[in-house]
Length: 470
Ligand SMILES: *[C@@H]1O[C@H](CO)[C@@H](O)[C@H](O)[C@H]1NC(C)=O
Ligand SMILES: *[C@@H]1O[C@H](CO)[C@@H](O)[C@H](O)[C@H]1NC(C)=O
Ligand SMILES: *[C@@H]1O[C@H](CO)[C@@H](O)[C@H](O)[C@H]1NC(C)=O
Image 1 (cartoon, rainbow, N blue to C red):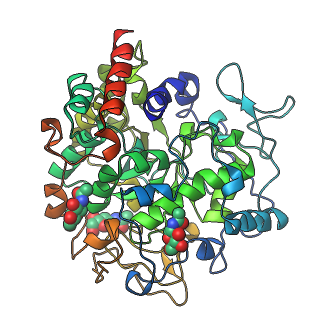
Image 2 (image 1 turned 180 degrees about the vertical axis):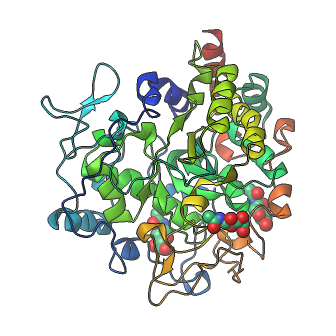
């Protein structure tokens, strides 16, 4: 189930949608019909993912990657999407409260049209201020599309992708056929270059590739949300939007020592006023889109939608051009090819005098989470760091973590998972480097158990072979 769906992901993307994002003709400026876009200490996210400091939390967290851990969440790639009858009641209450207070606009829900894009009911203009669809280049107020002047904020979508192989059959399908070890390639390169980045992660993929997730976290890369199952979010009901975001937030929270992500990216850049408002009002998430698109996801299409040479020449143009606004370039860690496109362009980012940083650290002024500055700083007790106007502030009662430095907390060893492993490490530290998956192609690195079973790996080899033959 997982593998065909994963492989279908880039195939589902349409060039039409992806191609549109760099020509922003509709700059949206009208505000939502609410006085407060940002909530402060009374924001519902306080209650939804409440967690005291790890030492006093009292909860025993399942080990990241264990079957007990995976069993707490929806199935990866649910065939009918998220089951909204199983959402935690607190999430539904938070949504209902936001709807009742009119902070979630009543935007019509589109269906996928014949051109592959969400189509709103006839007579409804997707670029109108009432709808403001990102697919049609409308920018919802408060969403981020541009970086600060002079900066390149690096991020990757759709990870973790491609296993760290332990079995021979996995090694054959992913290393010999050489197209699906994007995350491993990216992490190896970034560790060597001591360069943290942002990963917009798919919840379903975290379940399947827990070790790669933990490795990103260990390397102090920024963990952000890219939904549970990668739908066009504007086509989802309010409850489905809550499930897609909420389960991914919960999974990240329970697997990172309690960190609450601060940013999400809509798959295909597909958000609108309703979807962005649910993310902000219920979960405190700020939406980040992009202002340049490599279309690197289509490198593995048959035929490919772009080429390494085309991407490199676009990169030369963007990185050699104006430094205002700063660049947010859409890139994927889906494949060896998409990883290689980034690796080829990275020297241009550095040599052209840009400030090159992890996208989330950059736009968040070095505060990467709603309740913690980074992966090695303390999680604030009970309160969240307020994301208002992207200025890091600590709500009353929280401990100050705004320095962005790596003040280490003493971590409980009983919590299991990623949260147990931290000492006084700074982002991109040598510890992160040494844990890079540099041995992945030898088949010696640890792998998620999902990928070690013979039938799964054989199936994956068969599917890849069929695709490769096309
Ligand atoms: C996540 O952690 C919370 C405590 O912070 C716990 O109540 C919950 O059962 C855990 N798992 C899920 C899936 O929510
Ligand atoms: C994360 O780091 C800890 C120790 O710092 C280590 O035990 C663990 O194996 C690492 N996990 C991964 C996936 O790199
Ligand atoms: C974030 O911290 C890094 C490392 O300390 C620093 O180089 C960078 O300028 C900081 N970025 C911002 C936006 O404050």
